[in-house]
Image (tube, rainbow, N blue to C red):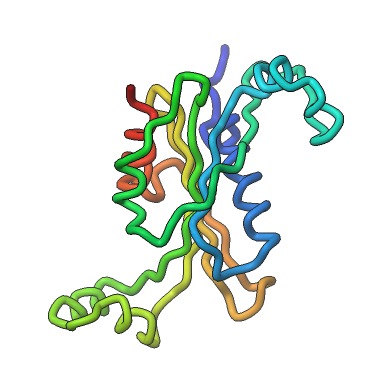
Length: 177
């Protein structure tokens, strides 16, 4: 009997976890970062010198390599994503983005506030979260959320497929021709 592949150990989930770990090494308070995902074997065929420089190895045909993209601007993230389209050589994309989250009751209380972002930043129940979400052509998605603790050792990490569905949909739209 063959079991279906575990989505939490898929190549996409693995590379999203690697990106989150890479971004976490630089600490918190970072701007959004975008990575194109390319099949490792194709990248090494096109750029054989990368095998030694980056320590990439072939062998797993489903292996994906994240390639950092140009820094995003200060424009709203949704507007930037809606204007992007990746070519067929890009199999997927990963975005690392820090946000503030509030409990539902606190969010409802901000509905009538003049500057909700500023009020959220000052709210005592806010949590800082780094969302790292990846998608591949065909609709697969994976995510890692890191909730900021009082110290880096107290950060919490959550892994799953549908952690940020709206962001995954926006990323998937960048892959449509």
